[in-house]
Image (cartoon, rainbow, N blue to C red; front, side, top):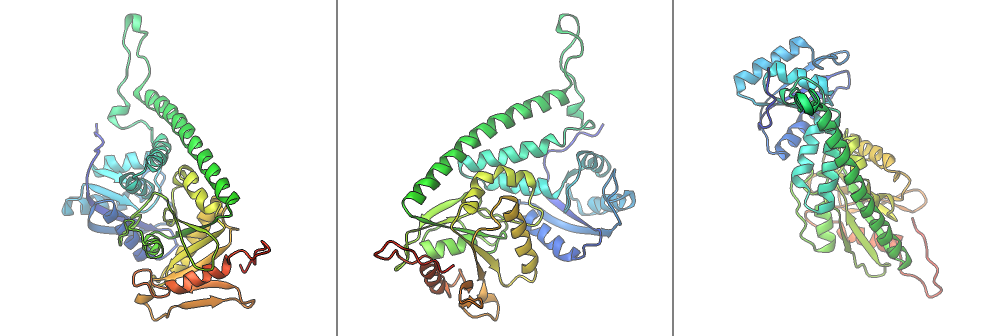
Length: 374
């Protein structure tokens, strides 16, 4: 019987094309995710299918190819750029004789490594448990052992699978209760800011678009920022003093990504409420990325899922230092600001963003009326 491995960081990447195209770009993003998780990428495997195989996802012939390349490279971890069912993951691990993770599990692993605050750790644990609950299937040896015994102990007792499922359900209930309390606390803080006429601005965007770098540039903070996916997870709020503008609080939120696991969106709903309740969303876009349109669509899908798609949004074309773009402000046909071009790394265009925020949220007039330019 195959004993499921619990570790491994020498990775082989797998991407199957079901007609979507862009296999190379998707494999490159999977590589970045793997490196962010601490894995060493030894090779890639790609293929084409009409639909996933129910048992092995990739099909038996492709699984044999993956197994051969895994043996030849010495890989002890296979990463699929797809969501796998519990049965598919089990079958693949038995066939490949090594650990298998799907895209969802990989992103959860990165989140578990990066969470620093107590709230962030609770949110990640909740998402992990919900994901694990779909993987409690027979086939791994630790799930086949039984507790209980004979005589007065009442026969074979519960299977380990049943015990695991019951413990997970109990833990999920406790985590939901804790996060509900944190959500109420956030709502109270939000109402307090609203009564104090404080404007809230939330940085959102695809992971590694430069949100934390821009946050540091605007607030003079020193949040951790790195050229990697999901460098920061925990939401940070700071006052952003701008001459001629109302009081503004700027928040840096978790980055989005294509196929962001639904359980993560649900678990981070309290954190993402900073975006859902914001007066303005600053959608930071990597202007140098050839897939920026697809990344914008991915962000919009998450915004729709958390109920924030209708919030006022200002697009920030970041990393213009890596393009031919120049810093500046773009307006629509009515003269309203829609886009600011800048480089958070060099600071070019950040003065334009400050001016844009002062125009959108001007200081209150003596009569107490506000001019809404957005």
